[in-house]
Length: 130
Image 1 (cartoon, one colour):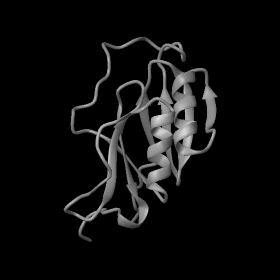
Image 2 (cartoon, one colour):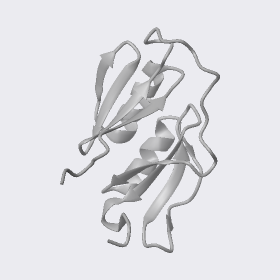
Image 3 (spheres, one colour):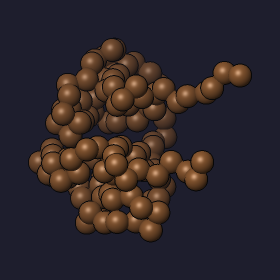
């Protein structure tokens, strides 16, 4: 039986250069511009693909917004350092660093485009009961 793995997440952004700068600073790696409107970041084998339809010459859509409880979750070793980088790069911190009832130590933020992101300390990540 073949196992399925998620390998890429598309994150729509209004400004591909600003997104590349923000995520390069926060993630601590420059990523790679793969087209005029796509900038990829390798997050442990999973690609975060920042995507600007306009910069790629694609048709615009009516907009994009996350539900208030919809986040992209990143596991990181140094939660305090990443929290500082999010703030320095122009992100908005939406919570204090907190211990959740399921054991994760994390904080919530948003990037400069309003996309909701969360960073959890990697040794506390909960991926289900199995």
